[in-house]
Image (cartoon, rainbow, N blue to C red; front, side, top):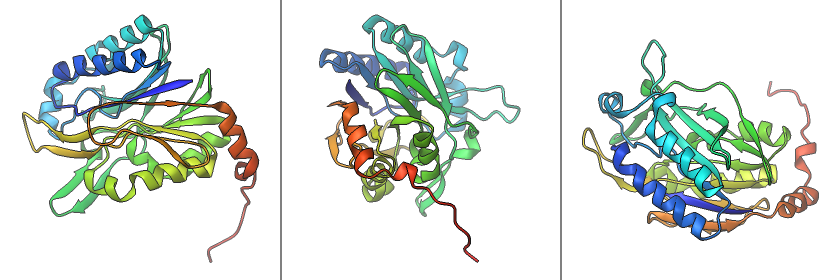
Length: 277
């Protein structure tokens, strides 16, 4: 299966972001992609809760979701919408950070709400409190695809290996990690974490990313790391999107998954143990 990872520099204007996203999906299809993936918060990169309340929609009326479903059906492709920021009916008004797997008929095959919230102090100048605006999901999600079962995750989830272990031992052969990774932590940890999850689980890891400085009409601007990556089951990076918006392509070979797992069958070697005291 040929995969195309879309790397975006989304602003806080969903209407302006949509035609760019659609154009890059078409670019990936023109290069032979059967499976196209977009990054986290494809529709809107914003740290302003008031702005998000003004421009976001619930799932059932979100124009980005509908347009991307239509494009998947038009092109006959599998499409992972890395995530969309969406309004919910939660009493506290928090949003959902939700990933969608869309089938070649445009139907929604799976939904995944980001479990781990990015509440960190990278530096005095760079702090994040994702849980203030977004409510965490509770459910790990897998979906069937022609290449095998797909395990869904989003961005900060990558730091919690137990999620990926559960997905892989549940049958996942490909793991998706769409992200809007911090520029600072991305430079330090992004590739290492993705390669570790691939090696530990004998899975392909597909990680489409946001990149660059994101235009904001309200609130502070944000910088993200870029470097959309495809990591093979043995741990080698087979595609790197660099730091410019665009598309990076890779061919996924199911036999590589089987070879990696046969060489080091660690998914069968988990052992119960006691302690620490």
